[in-house]
Length: 247
Image (cartoon, rainbow, N blue to C red):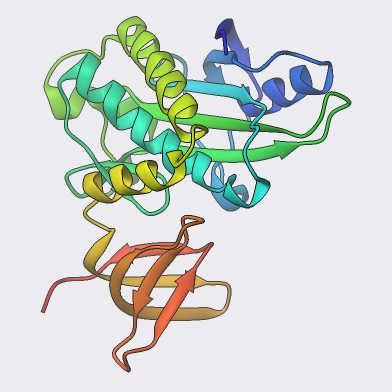
């Protein structure tokens, strides 16, 4: 994969533009970056606020060769890459909340959205990454649950260095994931870097169902294992996870 970066001052959504490029045959490794998004999206169709130059709004086009049942691992892989890039470019240590939110302390620093695209060249995956560079990236009322690179490090985020580190980390982790046993190694690495992987008391909202329990690692496809108070293991493949106070 040879990353190619397209830069825009403003886009409705970097994921939308990357998907459009994918349908027109763009090669794997195309990266779309915008200084602002006017219709940014998060998971479950939530709005992702994206003011001018307040965040890194980044999407990459992938055409995975691995089995499609393992494609959910791409979001976990992306969270690992974000963590490595923030450590390399900003000297900032982070945590991963299942499946792919990147946290600094107890506050959200980065969100990741993966979407599949049907194209003549075959099905593709768009990975959208939004990193808060400054507190202008989110509304004032979210300061209790959101943070930024600038707030955590006490200095302006090195935007260009972060882009370079993120692109390098994505390339490295994506290629490693698709090697023999790459999925097993990636899951082990994710588990080592996430406090949510094992022994975390959580509440999970899955549609109309609420699950409370303690995390017990990941399934081979990246699903989260949660042990309820009754001792039953529930597998979570989609849902909102909230950490609970330890008792």
